[in-house]
Length: 349
Image (cartoon, rainbow, N blue to C red; front, side, top):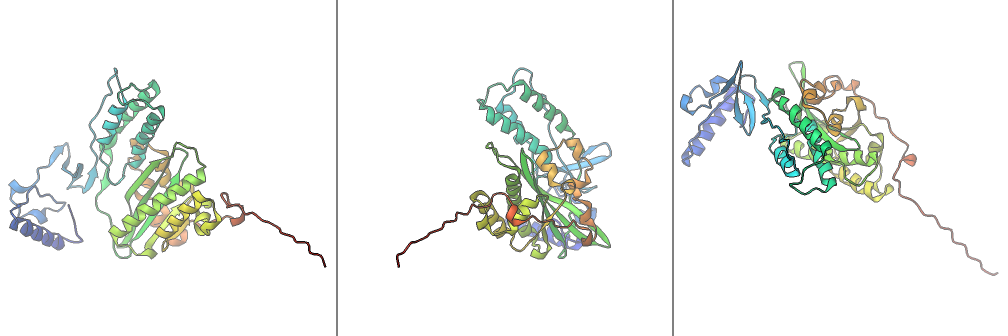
């Protein structure tokens, strides 16, 4: 699956791939395109057959549903009614594992499944032991609401050119933390902002402070943005990182040796991975990563502009971006303690 900026480039790619693989005895078939002119010379027998449901048609690609006509991705999920007799850790994990979302576009919903599994691990149940009623109720609700995932539509095409920017957001709650990245570009006087990917992790069992979890989210952001920047060949000046934690932003801008070991190690990693990028503060209510860290139901994601297109200021002039409030370095938590000693010596004249 690939694409290009215009029909001519796609036609050239198609011809080269057909000739290259054909020379090795690997004839290609099951072609599909969002433009019929691209596959007009392909025999009907070698074209992918669309599945038609009402006025909507799609094909299956990479375990996702893709509508060539509307050029959107959809997600498929087989409805599952938990048996009333027994729901075990094995049953829950096996069903969660069947959900395919490699880019994390539905991560706010997936994180609720991760949190449920986290609770199961803490209960130390065996694989085939029946789960408590509270877990059974949560799992039944998740199975019921996740069937609406086929109503989510994600545009396949992401506008990206040499002037495009990447904006990465991080956030944490007491239960989980996550990061998400958006591509922002300008074309024909219009600004396009699109969700590229997202990632989340469950908070560790050992309780740690919220600022430390926010710092873990910033590390996750740094790792994610590094891989995305490489794939998109984005220039460092066009990459922006966002957090709603002023403490974390102050930690990152400070000298790592000022902080305790936990903070210092993570600040060093963030500074190494994002040395050439710019960090900003974003208000919590405008932070799309907040949706990841807290989790969301599927129906809350349908048509959710904050999640799929980022905060509105990404599509406005840079002067409309939030300002960066900073903390006094001397009052920040996790400062390394300094020990002072005074030595006096008495000497006789």
